[in-house]
Image 1: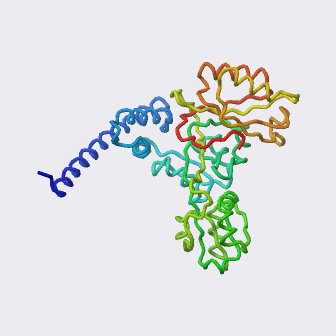
Image 2 (image 1 turned 180 degrees about the vertical axis):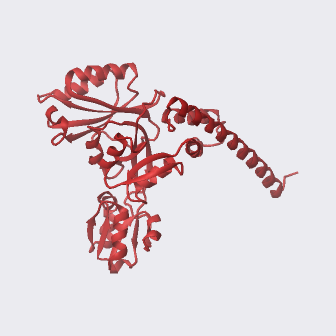
Length: 367
């Protein structure tokens, strides 16, 4: 005899009660962990430990729950647990409702105090001075490429890269006017670049004006006639704007990757990523030799960016500084030996940090 729908729902309710009770017990244990961390000076946010927890529960599953779903569920549980231990301070590129703000909140939820900044450089400053426990900085967009201001700031950073997170980017056209009435469009340069085809086809006559953030763009669009902004739909209500069109980004798989700055190095997890900056001597073949050193030690270089060194303390090292991401942990034998040998060839080698590699899906060398 088949069970009735009511019977099945009652069983689900009973299981939900068990889940809530188990979560209550887990949160009590998390609070005790927080007290132990406070006694020994440990950080609330431990990316390597969280990666191990998620990997363990995925391995424990019998396959009925997709791995991605388990990762999403436990990411939320872990974030909630952090909030019980301590309210941490997180710096992000403000104001509220920017994609950086959304990425920060997705990672730290309500267990954090959020510090908006006026520039990416200010995020580094707050984290380096420990006025922020963590900083969330954009590093790369899957369609618009790398963020130069972030790469430049890594050279003199005193903090560490401790984690990464990826945010799906969806843009909306925000205005109090219909399309034919719009004469100017405000947004952040990255947002305009990610929607340029749609804007050309649907608002080709309108001027495009770059501002420091999508939230600032919404402010301008709200107070000007015949104006619109490109930004997140959530910002529309706060500024008295309407969502004229949703999902106007040119590519549906548009994502931005963010790196998390902190102060405590991660232990190796077996699936890690390391970032370094280095500068080579001013001679023919010096970069080729440096990359050859990494290759000789079996180190997999996944991303390499070139930035001008002029105007920074390391300018004496050469005209350019290279930002590289490498598969593995800085304490791995091959990695440690490669970095040691690299120091003998380069005028500057700085390890920026190692962190669990989950989520790095769209790195492209030289992108």
